[in-house]
Image (spheres, rainbow, N blue to C red):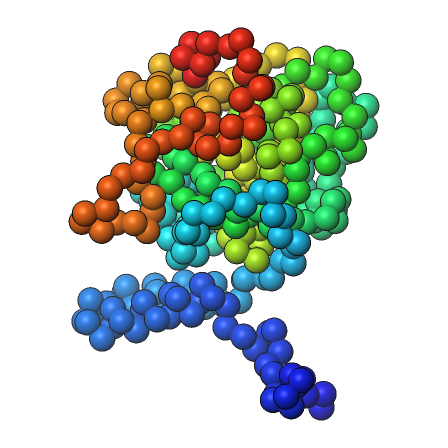
Length: 325
């Protein structure tokens, strides 16, 4: 039997023998709650089942850190990033995606790329993983509800895929269509939105280097509740613009009719850039709460224009960003 040792002759474990960080964190939290007597009956069984699922499903995903795309803020813990989510296909409560998303099958998975392009294609998830070198980028992501996270995402610029399919001159926008599986996604049975979930970007926004075709986070493949197996992350826009669990990418001439803009056009504009000067009709956008900073005396952070990504400002030169919100 081959035994791995370090330079000092000390035996090392194989990667498969190392408990993933998120499993260790959930186990530690589980033990603490158990000792405090706050877990009983069905909840005990549910937590055990969820831990077992996490332990068997997590897959490492190697990526080269890209220092050009790193914010220096403290990173959100894996536990917070994977248990406090908006993914209405699995329910509207923040804990619903973590509780129910395991029902979604992410293999086999294909993404159809079509529309105003010279080379339409359908790619499976393994082809997407190999299309370009994977990078780790630490991005802020801000929710329109007023909370934010800092997450190490894994993927590559969407422009790498766009180059492969060669859009023609009619391609003015890129539309993203997400999975709508009523058997796995019980939230589809509620008319919260017009399903399937659709989002879109202008072609120059989609081509910006910051726009990330995302396949993982925290050194692992994407968890289901975070948009497995492939999603978009546009860090200067509110989080709902970053479509999850994508099954179709369409290059179109006209501005896509996006899910939240259709549902509430006064509240959710097509562009949805992070802009502290444009309040949501029901609350201010001037400040935000960073998830994990929940102390009684913790002050909210001021919201930064474009979420702090000033390099995208040139995309909107001459535009009235209060009108085109």
